[in-house]
Image (cartoon, helix red, strand yellow):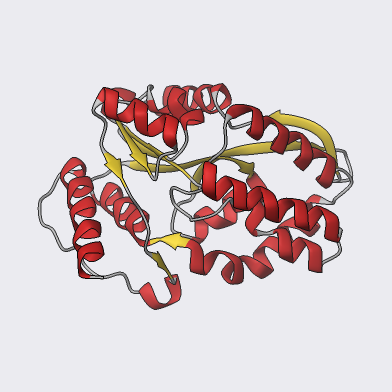
Amino acid sequence: MEAAFFDLDKTVIAKSSTLAFGKPFYKAGFLRRRALMKMGFAQLFYVLFGADEDQLERARDQMLMLTSGWHRAEIEQLVEETLEEVADPIVYAEALTLIDQHKREGRKVVIVSASPEQIVRPLGRYIGVTDFIATRVKTDAAGFFLQEIELYAMGEGKVKAIQELASKEDIDLAKSYAYSDSATDLPMMEMVGNPVAVNPDKELRKAAEEREWPILEFERQVSLRTRLPRPNPWWSGATVAGVAAAVTAAILLRKKDL
């Protein structure tokens, strides 16, 4: 079996998935205004400059402090109730196209994200992907979050989780694909035979250019409500590598026409 592993933030969607839910969490009383403002500044920095490993580690610690004492069921319900409102405008059309293509070619599509599983699972389902690897925060017997991580799906954590999945489901990583925007995912991308940089940060772009990996720029955010039913693809018999090149060409042509 072959697989396609997609990072979530700035690869499939245009924002940090965790930060995107900051406003609903604030409205529901889970966050104070100061925490929401900090998340807003973090989002701006993330969009402009990307995030290195130290920043993601700090984000993890801040997330644990913020969520400590929240109840898992309440968070899951809030995410479900606000999912369409939060996610619908920020999904990349180009990512959906590639996900569809991988499915048609018989590959297992997996979302791999450092965001909590309570956010990744419904987001994945919303875009048609049910397999995921995400951060798991420990809870107590009553279901309240603790300041402890069971799995942190970032960097080497992603690598270990993918290795376990590949062993369990007999996935041929040498024939598989990985998509990401961040240099923190270089370990994941180096695991597969077909790594692709998407909206890469400076460090990943440099690595991709040096290794002659494909580089894609995703920019068209779509509403899934208007996209369904999904149209037939505008290519025929193409390999995914060819699709990647076609997506890039389409984006360049669109920019030229603007």
